[in-house]
Image (cartoon, rainbow, N blue to C red; front, top):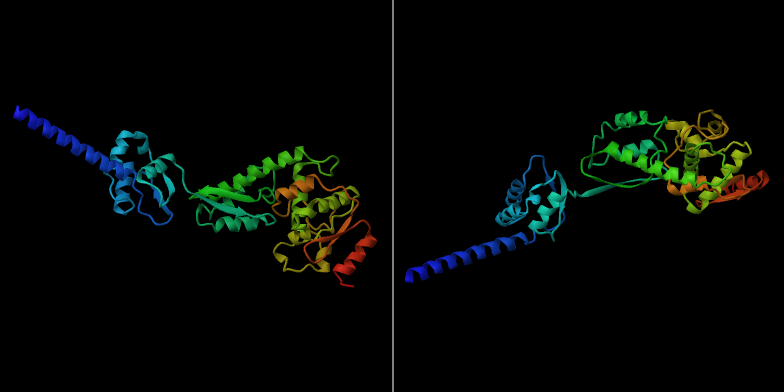
Length: 331
């Protein structure tokens, strides 16, 4: 009888010990990790969940990993860790780390591609981002991508926006997303365009939008400027817009436009050519596209900078010349 009581006591003691150990390890699963600030952590190819736990313990991110290894037995899905770069936060627990690594929710980085800049400016921006890869081949990759499109240049074909991506995303992937976003927005805007516009295709509207984008940074003026250009096209007048001259000059532009530049023929010089240039001259914003496809109804044919970012609009050449004297010649 005493032996039976002793054995029961031993069994009970072992059971309590096991429960205590399980409780200790379970508590460890929910302990906060040892990071003081957001920290990037990379799960590499071939890394197992157990290997990750050993690595996290060795680097001091977690204090003990036995409880987490037990949890892997109980939740096999947590063993399916995914390659990538993750953000460890001070508030996280060891269990939340395993859930993060198995979810594949990598840390997101972003790059802002600004309206009004040219493709070469965007290419430079993409090539300088340390989180993107394949940047040295971006020029070649973009040329290959362009060959699959019915255009001669990527100028104007990419939608200005802030794009999110994971670390080591190829730079050309951002370009392709920006192109797809532009096509989607342009197609929708084209369907909702005003009647009787002087554009045969949505691409011509995009060219106009790029000119409007370069002519003013004042959002409220864009529809009116687009209205002026539409009026000029409808009356077979040259657009005579300086940004097209500058674009046509390429690397020859030194910051000033001279009288001879206005007279020098290029494919883009709208003081010389009639109609629109062959391609956009910059990446237009959504607002500029909207303005080009829904311009203000106006009788204006001219505008001149007032020197404060806004413009003076005129219906006649006489009014325009007076405005030029006032705002440009200061007479």
